[in-house]
Image (cartoon, rainbow, N blue to C red; front, side):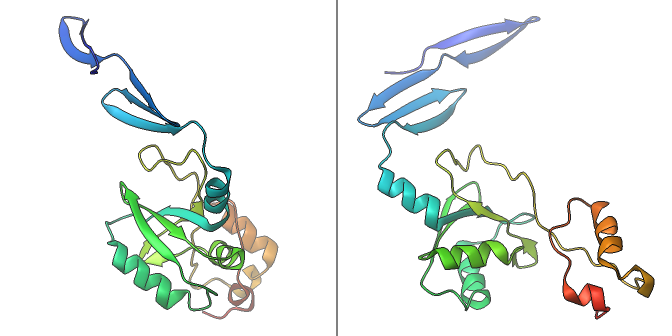
Length: 182
């Protein structure tokens, strides 16, 4: 089977478009639309889904392409407190799946954000059933703001939060900022 092309004319211009093409094989449905393929799992095994939801994170390094081996080295060196092994797989369009072995490790990675790889931010979020590297987006990124030479009378939690609100919603203010250590 193949998608049937249609010629669409808009104000004297012709372009080629295709009708959506759907094939169902077993528990999977493949849909080709606008030269883009989407795969849907009709009956996803709940054990596999539960494992992915509980132990997998997805992320993308922003600013530059970084190979998988470098991300693995960053996790080995920066996450030496992880209780068990982990795996990192490339999913396409520079998205990576980070699979950990325990909830404690997931919590550690998510609570100790943001992660950086070669100076570029590597935001991570939990995997969801509808995640696709071809349609994924990052809604927010946790970042760190440095304000050099901040006067002492601004070293108050409420004042620092007001300053941070200029950039976005504050996530946390570290102890060093409150006591004045650089």
